[in-house]
Structures are given as C-alpha cells and as structure tokens.
Length: 115
Image 1 (cartoon, rainbow, N blue to C red):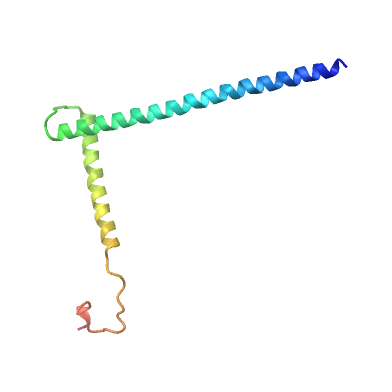
Image 2: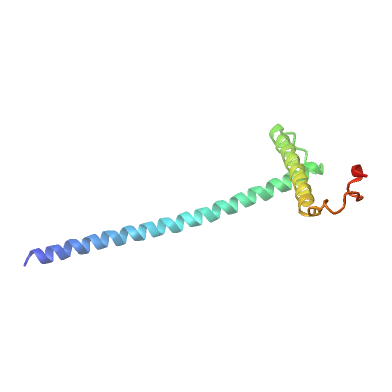
C-alpha cells in the first residue's frame, strides 16, 4: 500500500514541476513579446528621427558635416531615385496597350515601316 501513495506523490511532483515550467515559459514569452514590441517602437522612433534629420540637412536647417551622415543622405537620394524609376517602369507596363492583331492590318499607322 505504500507504493501507491509514493507513486501519487511522485506524479503530483512531476505535475507541479511541469506547471511551474509552463508558468515560467509563459512569463518569458510575454516578456519576449513585450521586448519585440518595444524594439519595433524603438526602430520606428530612430527611423522617424533619421527622416527628420535628413530633411533638415537637405533644407540647410541643420549643418552636420559628418561624412557618414552625408554618405547615408546620398544613399537615400539614390534609393529614392531608383524607387521613382521603378514606379515609372511599372506604370508603363501596367498601362501599356495590349497586344495588337497585326494580321488584319498590314498597312496601319501603328506600323509605319510596312507602308
């Protein structure tokens, strides 16, 4: 009869250890989620600050003769130009006329070299 209470005691101990570990894991998960949100907020604040500083430097409201900052501003301008060019190309593709059936019209205005 002593084995059964011993077994039950061990089982309860295992359940308690598992419960404690689950609570710890849950708390760690909550903390990590909070850290992730805080990190995102920090990133957004740095990004917004960077945008404000870049605009101030461009408008000559801020004179910052830091070579790395000037490099980054130059990179930002290149990226903005590239994005504008890509958007223009995408719009050309999106709004281009569809294929033309040239089998019916050999002498159309669309094909002046055939005239």
